[in-house]
Image (cartoon, rainbow, N blue to C red):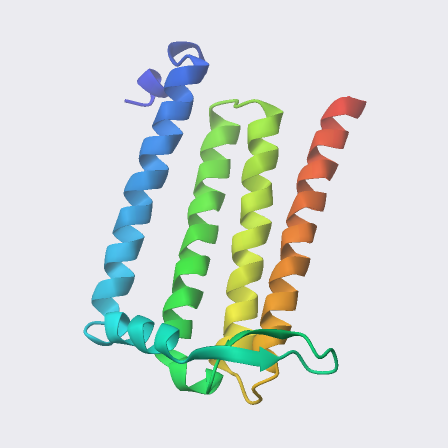
Length: 167
């Protein structure tokens, strides 16, 4: 089977199709596993979370944004979000290893590294600011962190593409 995966045996289109199939299959397995682990509370937790959203003022800004009335009341939902983010981050690491093994183009590897930074960063923020939330203001700190992680992931991708350009 490994011989079938050799770089010369796979066209770019087939290789990307393989990555897509692995990714989507693993994503469904991850979603099912998280749902099963958190049964029966996950669906009720989602409904409860969205039903408690209200406009709250971002501290020291006067800007109202959606936030749950009691952010600390949704621990199980935050734990599921952490597990999902961590699982996707690990999946992206596996995809990167496959991309390296199958000699994918550098721009695809850079995209995968961008995804790794984003999902592992998101999992860190979820466990730090949501699961261990002690103050309602941390809800907005979490979202500010997500924006920062998104920027860091774009910078990581840019460095990889810049390194490719220099060689």
